[in-house]
Image (cartoon, rainbow, N blue to C red; front, top):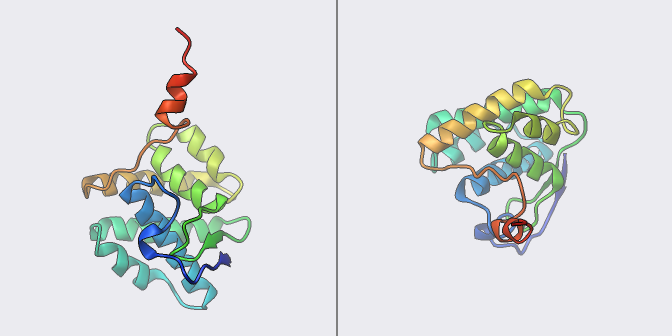
Length: 158
């Protein structure tokens, strides 16, 4: 795993502006997972317990299964930023977006994951379940299929 580090970052500013709470939760989980792996520690219990503070035990368990499946099928080291960084690596973005779009656009989610894993299908199945579980917890993931609405509307021809 490749981990970028920003020691002065604010934990409340994890990731870029405009993330929904569920996206920020997934991003934080990915980053903490990566940090613990770099430190040589097993992330399962720490990440699961942290997610359970915000989401259900089911969602936490599904996230752990999602990251486990990612690790078993990964094609390259996952690039992650430190937990408090306001940036967003391409790998982090691919994982978070795939969870959001998976239930409605599996082909797009699969294309997002193809550079990261040898077989996207099992990861997509877990991601769809994670998405549904988070929604049941009141933490819905957005379906980001295009640019922001204002930009999309500006391109519509009448």
